[in-house]
Length: 308
Image (cartoon, rainbow, N blue to C red; front, side):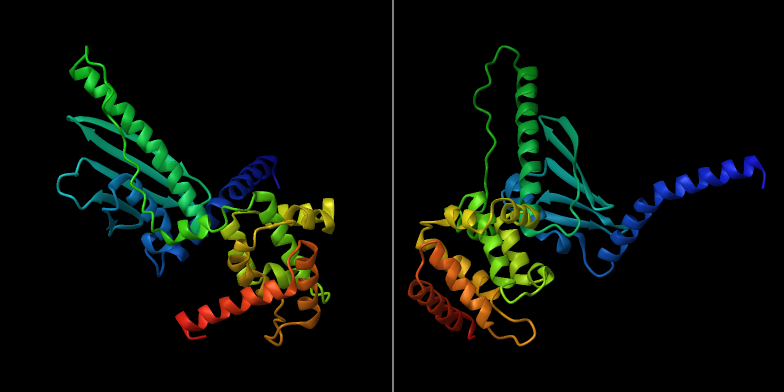
């Protein structure tokens, strides 16, 4: 085997190693878009941008030749001066904005990285971040255009509206946890783990529980951070963080606490996990009767609205 051949082989191998993650990401894109549209994959992302930049009237137009691309424009015929183009690829969203004001055009790009499998909260957070960037650039563009048209005029009347939907269900869920600090949210997740593993169940029983994953998304915290807090400071530290927690917070976290007491094999509450739940609640100042009363109210509400 000649030296030149080895060099070529090494170069090709290096190129393969560099391109492999990219090609793998492209394959994932294709699978994602095989049976869903871009709007169906990222509904909260697009609805937030529609609310933030188009007063809720942003309409998605897919591009037939490429399922990775869509455009957004306002359905209001009097607000056709902005178009937002989206290109999704390798888990990232490249956004290009075109905006005209007095025939002067503003164009800029914004990239949202790591959007693949993003939760509703991540989609909203990334969309809100883009909206704020876009509003700032549009505001500055308007000022520059007016100054160009009227150099001596002091511009103080241009503003950018912030028309978010106050009835957004995701915002409502997020706001229900406003009374908790980030550390308290992490402590609650860690206590959920203690309850879920009270019968010596493996960690995977907890981390694969859909209710747990949902609660972590609602709290917008990392399981690794919650676990580190428990390992670094211990159980009592978690109880101290949550001592005196408002009872008004309990109804919205009770479903999470209940879910971690369930034995996945039987579908019933585990006696050991339930006992640990009451011990944890007592340690933070919540009695068994108080918790059971709230749990019963939640159950009755579920029966009333969902028949179960």
